[in-house]
Amino acid sequence: MSAIDDLPPLRQVIATHGLSARKALGQNFLLDLNLTAKIARIAGDLSGADVLEVGPGPGGLTRGLLAEGARRVLAVEKDARCLPALGEIAEAYPGRLEILNADALDVDWATQLAPPRKIVANLPYNVGTELLVRWLTPPAWPPQWDSLTLMFQREVAERIVAQPGSKAYGRLAVLAQWRAEAHIAMTLPPEAFTPPPKVRSAVVHVTALPEPRFEADAAVLSRVVKMAFGQRRKMLRAALKALTPDIEDRLIAAGLTPTDRAEQVPIEGFCALARVMAKP
Image (cartoon, rainbow, N blue to C red):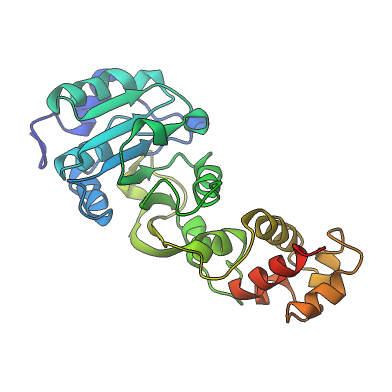
């Protein structure tokens, strides 16, 4: 018996169903059910929320979410080998777990969940950043999620919460902190996973703000930030010259120094530039 429910321990589940982690799918299984329940608690009160989970694997975090009272969980799993194990969890928590055998990049998840919606996932390493950027850049704000509680490689987590002037500060920090609060809630060593990754991992908790911190057109800001950090070693006037011939004048109009580099510009500065760039 596990510490959180009457289902078998995860090592037994993995052995029973032959679920060796596949590197090609970015899989690293978290087997400590007390730890998965702790991650679920970071997401806050789940009793009145629907939860999207991406890449549940054998279902360790899934069980944590359900044991912590999630109203309903939509588990999106690309690896069909994991479906029987997840099916056993669905039987143990009748009516509360829906399993979708699909690529999370192709799923219109919000239409299948009722608000409030939370996203909680030990994200596969190979798609984690792409999914995060999608969740941070919806067509409208506030987004369809209330919070994100996500496991990343620690290096990626540090990029999400980084401050201007640091080497980790970049596009992810701007996109995350412009319209949300983000902090690292937990760090995990490699040995917490099977197989152990080569790097430490961290759980990032992101809460959506009702409105952006500073006014800016989301599409313009995203384009400016992507270009600025795409050539982060260059001065702004060189990194952004492809945007417009008069980029130096526009930088000055936004209150920025053309010879600065992207990592020196705070979010407010990028938003000011986006507003200037949106003008004819």
